[in-house]
Length: 366
Image (cartoon, rainbow, N blue to C red):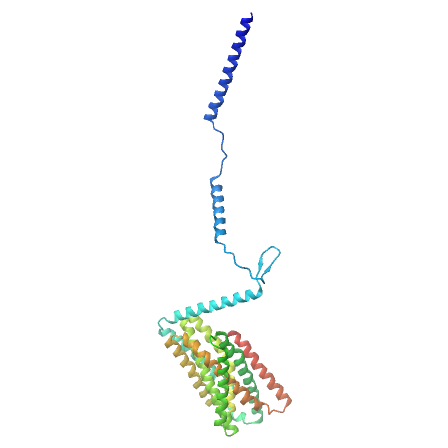
């Protein structure tokens, strides 16, 4: 009995061991046939993440830390606030770079072959400027010479001369000298020397060539014509050079010069009438000064403008400004000071300021 119980127990133990081994074998085989599921990754997402990580690494390598000046402003979020002084410096540097590029483009365009169309357009532009010189003759009465000999005519002429003084001063201080200072590359003292030289030369000519009041007026008119001749020469350079760059640019330049010259030509006519020029003699004198513009345009087209235009303007414009200052302040204005009528004085003062304001407004287009 005891022997049978031992046999049963042994059989049960062996059966249990066999079942356990069989179960482990089944689990092992299932692990081989069905491996544990690996985490699934989206390939596009992985590529995107790798690309972003790579770009961030490249940016970190490319970023060069710039030294922050001591006076730089920082806002509460840690962002740099550009100082107004630094902004102005950057704007000035950008302006100089733009001027350099424009000059390079103009020089490269100017080296192309000058065909008959450019010559034709340039001469048309010069003709428009010449027309400005004779336009005042068509607004004066036919018997203007006899009218100016009367007392009323003299007063009208003095009013016109007051406007001439204002326009000359406006032309000098709002156009000629600022234009030289903006593009001047040499010593600024040279501008003052050329201006003083033009003023003193007119003074010496007046001292040596005038003996009477009538001769003084005549010399004043001649000096004004010479100054206009040189001024028109620079205008011709500008017109010719602008048409070398392009037709549109040339037309805009011509329009700006015409608008600027209209009040100036009225002043020139008044100075000629003051010197007892009749209307048609004044027209001939104005046409003579217009030859300076044609000469300047021909020079610009012949040598393809560029350096000669800038070099000529650096001494012609301040020299012309000195001559205009002498004519306005030393020759015309003292004559206007003899007026004793209060109403006439107020009108003269108003026209003087009017001439300055007109030149200031027109210079916005120049």
